[in-house]
Image (cartoon, rainbow, N blue to C red; front, side, top):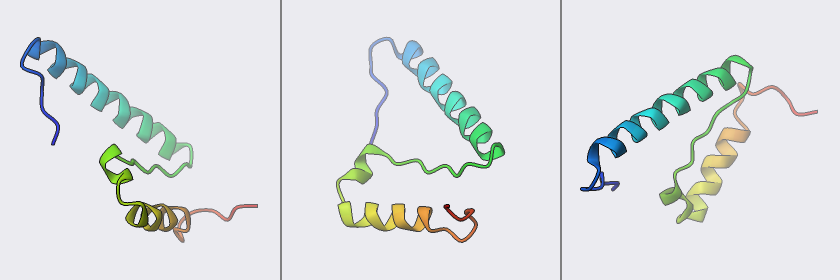
Length: 68
């Protein structure tokens, strides 16, 4: 689980909130442009089998337009 550093706490809280807002904005823009968005966290890279299932599910989603 992620933890906020004890030193310079106000800096890190502001930085993390800014990152979250930026990511939400970028994901919204991508979806509006017709792109699918999948967020993969570093911790999810450990279980390769589960990651593969998740990626396949995302890429083969029936709502996605066909690849030509």
